[in-house]
Image 1 (spheres, rainbow, N blue to C red):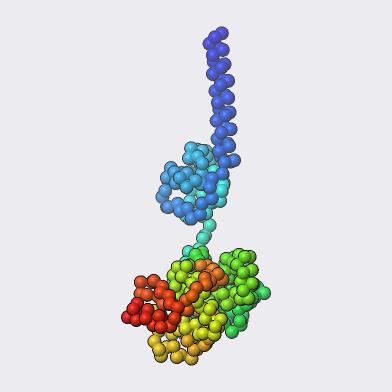
Image 2: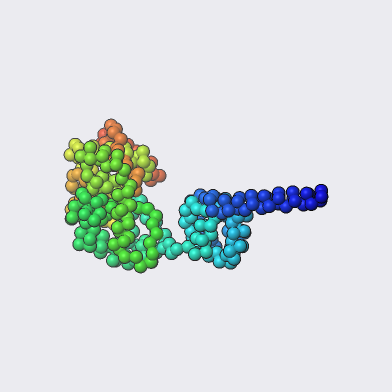
Length: 338
């Protein structure tokens, strides 16, 4: 009888253990969610154990044992597909389904650098095989004729019809499928710019009596002139002050925009080019942006730092030298630029 009793106890506890193990397995399989992870790459030829270890390390799954066991029971071990995945916060069942279905076509990763012009962006898009540079330039240089209007894209509300989309295409990393039409590419970038503006930024801009077009134009100059956010804010204060007192901006970057040059300082002859973008000849802001500025430059244009300075220059090593008077500025030019 004792033997039967012992066997009975073992059976009962074994059954309870099996039930608890099953509950634990089911819980970890469906209820426990891992972390959301983007751009997780599974290479061709990677085995289940390798994939499982990396998913666990990244936090996508919470149990390698449950993951590997589930794939084995489903017969899915050889069905995991290589590719680049964006995992949401998901259960092991959901992660497994994603891996078996395979990564969706993500398109080509295209990164636009802050301060790039429309021409720079066009060249990058063509080199990545997304679209034709010529087609891109034709559309962005004639935005209204190609459907880029303020009723469709509110971010264009203050853009004059006489200028193109320079300054309005937010520099960022995007993914576009090869052959994507210009309208989709440009629309995505315009929408991205709008998303960057917080309600507070918009309110502060309005309170200053400035339009978005003016802010983007100033920001595009800052992007080309100086590097750090601190310097951008100081230079923004100087340039807004020059406008306020009726002094020409005299920014070399605007002349470079006309000539296509990238010189740290322009020649006297170049400052005499009769072009509305020449801020040596024409007072105030140029007609539009001279580059596509990043968020730091936009912030600096909205929130300039007041100072006693009226002049600045950038040394060959990138250091910004400030001056209060023209005489001091000339001395600094002789010291740092010759």
